[in-house]
Length: 183
Image (cartoon, one colour):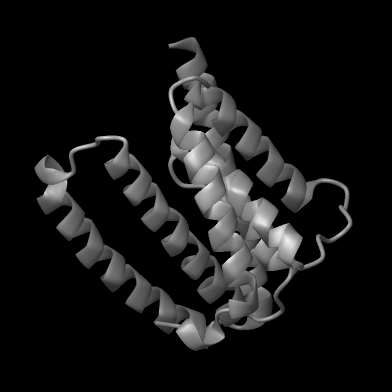
């Protein structure tokens, strides 16, 4: 819905990295405990948002290839890695629609490759078809609603809200990591 705001020059290296990361992660998907990766991602996101200022990651072909590879490797274990990718996109965009559109495009590619990888590994999607259709319909409605809000939201409120949402997601990851490691 915001495709004309996507930073397409970053897309190819991210997609290639996604292919490498998913292929690698698909080979060892059951070897690393999920809670461990959730905790690492949660801590990384919190540090990138609220820790001492890191030198901004310069947008380059290699940077986004590396982000695509690492995030797609991790997504094979923990599901959604949006909070892991978001700080890099946030630091390299200066307009809310570009931030959201580029992040959405990256996540669409990443999840598409993940679906393909799990299919090749033998996962049967058939029993979940109605759930997937419902998720797609709700996803479209949520995206449409979000686009409306994004259009009227001032840039400074977007940046603050974006950081708050990422913080909440990171804290949720840490909570899940702690509760899953003990139970």
